[in-house]
Structures are given as structure tokens and as C-alpha cells.
Length: 294
Image (cartoon, rainbow, N blue to C red; front, top):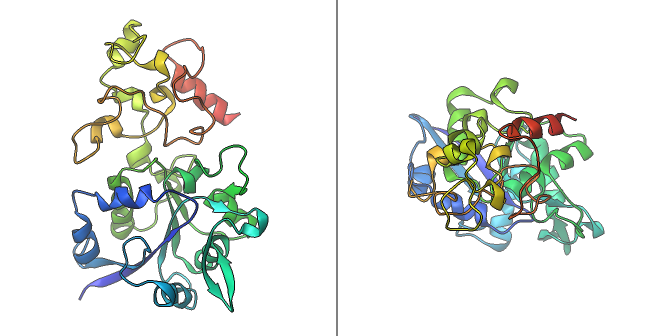
């Protein structure tokens, strides 16, 4: 007997990059994830994901309509993308009812009310990302903000990244299946799993020795720390230096680019290729933690 955990994936204001990243998961593969038990005796039943499901139109949307009729806690809701709320939220619709478009905000709220937990997949869902960047004409908000606006108190786990590493999503789901929903001690102040977002990029960066010695690259391609070229590693929490991307092939700093801080709430507010701030080194991480506390 295999227990099935229903999962509903709702795309909101985003670029589908988070879904593409998930499809590139290597261990387990996406086939393993969709077909085989993730852990012995437990299988994820991905009921709705418009990017990869064969059904379309009313047949596909019927899955969402059926989900909101189920008993509370009957499925896990994963959302990639911010939630548009401006201009009657007409910037992002999914299907119709009685000839009228249904907004993503409406779909999200209906599904969130009945969900066991909500997973914010990617930086747009977690922190607003590109869709919520200034001037934000669609008035996009984070999942957390949308839930608060509608008085919904559900367990929320942020899995940021632009896109997030597939291991971060798969590992979070596997942890829920093995251990249940994470406790407050398992998540940081931004509701990210400490397993994946517990340390600064800076702590495990292979160029850290250059930083400590004050050897900074002045242009791309030079040897040295990339801090002067805008690297956000000293303020960014993620395990990219040890996990790597593309099946462990490389990662952004390994390819010669500075970290852009895509897992951080500040991602859209800081210039990409400019030095983050002039503070006494090497306490940049501590400096930004104190700023967030303020």
C-alpha cells in the first residue's frame, strides 16, 4: 500500500523558470518524483501543473474546482510567482466561471484555505521578485502578504531562488513527508528551510581567501574576490557553493559572475553589479543582519 500526497502547483506572476528548474532535478529525476515513491510507501500525486500536464481547458481546471471541495488539509499547495492584486487583479487570470475570468488571486485564496500547507516556490512567490519590482503596476504581493490580507493562517514555507535549485524544492517536500511540517526552529526569519538557506554564500565561497586578504577583482575575468564587482555573497543565504547547479557541474561564482543575491528579500532593490555597501570588512553579513532586524 502506497500513501499518496496530493500536490497542486499553481503558476502566478512569474516566468515559468521555477518549473523548468524542477524539471531538471537529477536525483531523483522528475520521472522518479512523479511516478515512484519519494520515500518508501509515500508517493506525490501531482494533480495540477499546467506547464507539464496533458489535460487543458475545462478538463484541467476541473481539477482545481474539485480540490476546493475537498476536506481541509487534503493537499499541499505549491505556488510559483507573485500574486497580482491591482486593477481588479486582471493582470493574471486562469479560466472562467459563468463567462467571467477567474483571477489568480481568487484561485490562490480558494486553494490556500483548504491546503495542508503552502510552498512559495521561487523568489517571486517568496519575496515579490521581478513582478513586484518598482513601479509594480500590477500591485503584486508575496504569498505571505496575500494570506495575511485575507486572514488565512496556514503553514508557509518559502523556497526562494531565481530560480530555486531543484534540490531545495524536492528536499523540502521529502522532509515534510519524512518528518511532517517544519517547526519554527527549522525555518529562518524569512521562512526559508535552514537546511538549504542556513549559511551565507560568503562562508563557503572558494574565493573567500581573496576576500580575507583584501584581493578584489577590478574587472570580470580577473583573479580575486568579486565583492567590488557587486557580489552579494556576503549577504545571501543559500548552499550554492557546496551544492552547485546543473547536476553539480558549476555555479554562478564558479562561472566567473558575482552572486546576485537571488534568494534574498533585497534581490530587486540592490544594483546587480555595484558594491553592496561601504562597511568595515569582513563583517558584511553581520551588518546586513542588523539592518534586517531594524
